[in-house]
Length: 336
Ligand code: SF4
Image 1 (cartoon, helix red, strand yellow):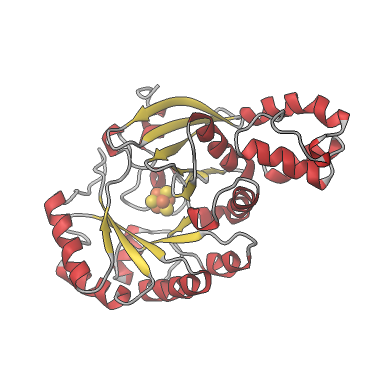
Image 2: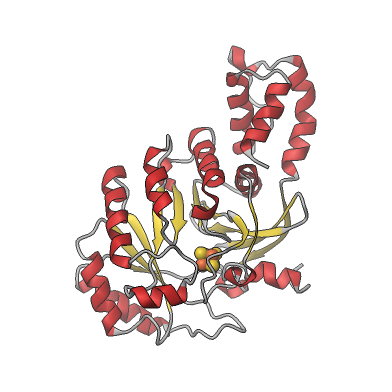
C-alpha cells in the first residue's frame, strides 16, 4: 500500500489538505488521533472522525510485530509481518535509530548477503515503509531512520522517496537523520537532489576494484567505484551532509594493502566517512570475518593516511542478525 492510497481514503471521507496532514502527522508519530485538538483544522469533519477508527485498524495491520530479538549492544531485531502475511526485518538501533526494509528480498544479489539469495519477491509500498517506523515508535523513540534493511532502495525509488518525504515533513525526523543507503544507481543522483526532503546518503562501496565489485554485487548498476565516489562527493557538497561509505570487511577478499591504497586514492580529502563493518558470518555463505584486531589495525592505518574511518559492529549480529537472516530463520520455522 502506498501513502497515496491512504490519502485517497482520507479525501473520500471529506479530509481537506490540513486535515490530511494532521491525521498523517499523528499516525507517523504513533500518536492517537484524538491527541491535542487546539486549532480549527484539528477539528475533523464528522465523516472523517467516524471513519478514522477503521482506518487506524487497517494501518496498524500494515506492519505487526511478529518477534523481537534484543542484542547486548542495545539494538533489537524485529521480525515484522505485513498485511499479506509476508515478513521483513527492522532493527531498533542504539541512540534512537531505526533501520527499515524497503523490499521483500532484493535483486542485487550481493554474494555475502542472505537477502540477496532470494531475489526480489515484491516491492514494499511507501505506507508499509512508514508503518515500520510507526511500529517502532510504539516501542520507543525514533529520531533517525536508515534505509538499510532488506532491499535496495534505489530499486523502489518512488515508494522510498514518498516515505522519506512524509517522515521528513510530518514525521518530525530531521532530514539529515534520514539515511538513504544504496549500492549506487544513476537515478539516485538524479532524483535525490530534487526532493523537498533531501536525505543523507550511504553508498555501499565494498571494494575499489571494478572487476571485484562486479563479482561481489553481480546485479548492481555498473558504476566504477571512482565514479561512484565522485557522484557522492557532488551530493555531499550540495546538501552539506557527508557521505557514509559502507565497507563490509571480508577476510582475504577486500582487506589487503592494495585495497587500502585504493581507498586512500578515492577517499582521502573527500567529504565523507568510511564505515568499516567486519562481515557477519553466515552459515552456507563462503566468506570469513576478519578478527576485530585486524579490522581495527586497518581502520587505524586508513585514519593515519587521511581517511576518516569508523569501525562498526553490524547491529544485532549476535542474534543471527545479518540482513535477511532472521526472516530466513523464520521461514525455516526456528525464529518465532
Ligand atoms: Fe540487496 Fe543490500 Fe543484500 Fe546487496 S546487501 S543483496 S543490496 S539487501
